[in-house]
Image 1 (cartoon, rainbow, N blue to C red):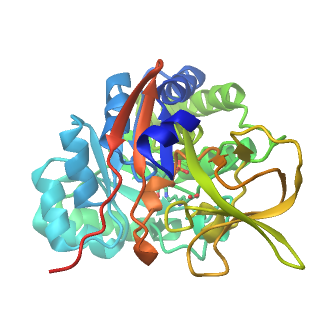
Image 2: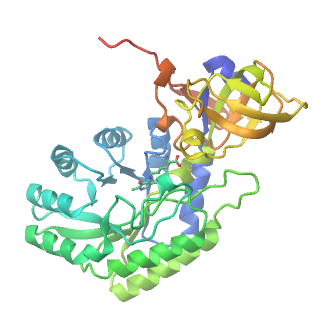
Image 3: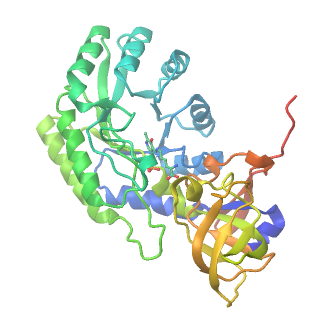
Length: 384
Ligand code: LLP
């Protein structure tokens, strides 16, 4: 790993392709339902080379913007779910023209869609009153959420759809992100299936993403095999009652890519104050934002073996006090050492920016020992 930093510079994102394949296979083998469809939520990591790995595995894709959709097409995807969050008419037209399956987020959107494409087919995002997730900011269901159409408004969905001859062929929900409780998943699944019964023309039910991964040492991963069996059984039962074997759709992001990625950053110095020991590094929240945004825990390992561990704060190079990657960690480090921040493959590079004039890092893909630069380090350019 340290050689990669010598070759491609620091800081650096490094991904292991095989981990992505492992996670995808794990998911499809765990949920043994013949009409299962996995759409990768590419907001988690939209590097086109990562997208291609998932396309080759047989995944579809979920996108939330025109740029993501264009990238998906460039990566060769044809099975695209377009999740509408505050879309403009222009965006709707674009999604209609490309025959993406659109997930409608509000009654107003359904109406606009109906006017633009009378007689078309869509999926609708339902808020069934249940939300969950690893942080307040990533809970996307429940009474406080801005997403979806509340389940009590189903009669209005049916009325607006009928007015414009729009066919509701899918129902969708995404209750939140980073969920490690199978119980919550099943509860939310049952809730959506209750709502689904009110739509007579369904072809699929989409349960969104949200599968968590363990970030902290000792944290239990989702028991995917057991959960998968429960999911398949519950869905089979629903289909028997519904009278048709529908497609079962998920839109995972984190689960597929988080563990494949590490973020490498170099220690610039170790700074002692009367109160703290700061391990200062050549990156910050502009390049890896999860600890700053959500207080997320990421394991940090020094790639140079040292044995004088002490309690430290790992501090970034951005001019804000909140810019720390970790507090109260036992870590030994010296200037020049390379630190590895683990599980950085999802929502790492994807949420990076050039804030403070620190150009976004490069990305490298390791596949069976073969190393490939899959994105150049950004260059800061002046505005004209
Ligand atoms: N589908 C929809 C409609 C979504 O909004 C999301 C994520 C997903 C699927 C994928 O969720 P996942 O399987 O990755 O949990 N930046 C945050 C995560 C935000 C997720 C937003 N929506 C983080 O770093 O934890």
